[in-house]
Amino acid sequence: MCELMTIAAALVFTAIYFVGRSRGRTSPAVFTTMLMFWGAALMWSVDCVFNAADGEGLFDISREDTILGFIILAAGLLVFGALSLKERLFAVRA
Image (cartoon, rainbow, N blue to C red):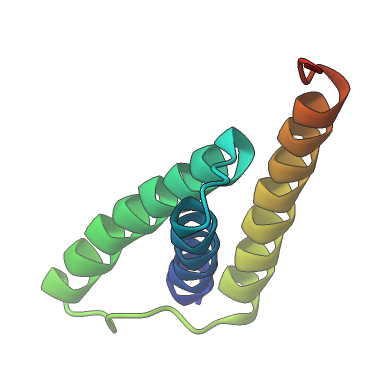
């Protein structure tokens, strides 16, 4: 379940990044968070493939895995919040 939640978060941040980029407003906080979620999704994709190769199900839809997914989402959003705050506090005003 954490794989599906991480992919969903990565897709959302990717959409936000490309919409912002098309409007000429790129945010390093959005870009960094997007890459973090894609990295986590890639890591869990490898884990899912090896679990399937061992005869287990492709996705683990257990309570513990769902809790782990929520923890990862919360940590990613916390990093995004910290990076956004840093951007706003230390922005060079022209």
